[in-house]
Length: 390
Image (cartoon, rainbow, N blue to C red; front, side, top):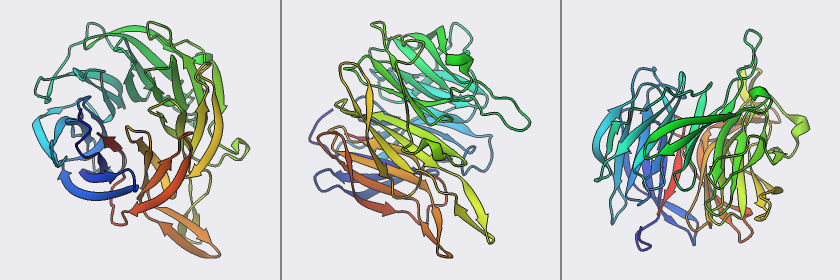
């Protein structure tokens, strides 16, 4: 990866991938190109070189029109302009993909599916294109409602995040778990599951790790909680958390569909950031409005000796449903994609904040300050992924 080429931001809106040049010093974005794929982008992940992006698509899920077309493909970023170009053949997938990552050297892509819960591994060819599925030596136990897959530093283990489901009036709770696999060059060997309390009251959504710290940070969607698990020298996580904190500033006032979301550790391990999403809507005088709640990025400073997080800030994301956010490789800028419109009733009238990308500066201590936002009022599909690629 060279430092001279432009930093690229890539945002998905339905089947569209929008490419922006990023000026970190001035905290600005300028759209440069667009690539339209066949179906809605569900998630994406860059090659370790920064030259390619692996994109999972489906006509299912939020904003989908069905649930019968699913594929993954490579996209090339032009070396000079960073424009997005199709690269190699698309690969059909067995179901709707919800998350995609690569191993540390980008030799393989790993893809998670939620319904039915599943995990597949795919070769990445020498030219960066996406190759064939790797046949696994054993059946994959993917738990209930997988939502993310990550490879630990050093490519020694894989964590499949299985969220589970909350109880309803007609269905008991499905327990959540972190499914842990030993990993060897594309092959998965089941190791054990992390499921405190049998997985009941444990609904993980995303995890993140930092190469320099022996800790794994987990956002619990259904509990609005941040859990921290120690990582052993063989990259295997502990089975019980060392620390557990609320992601909400006011956990006593949880409203309908208040859910923790994506989680990212700062590139220099200063802080860990968790998105809080207030998704509840209500009908008021025949009009749909937000039920309120916390739509924020919660900022936790990390004690590098113990791994303990300490809440230092809660920042309004300036929109609705911050499903996805990204930090630039230098750790100085954060982009938050508020994926849906936010209708709020004030004094009998409704104001609507459109889907947008909010830009924040990241200070030396990891705290955030809002700079500006870029609105996308014509976005007719959700923004499901944003990334910053050097």
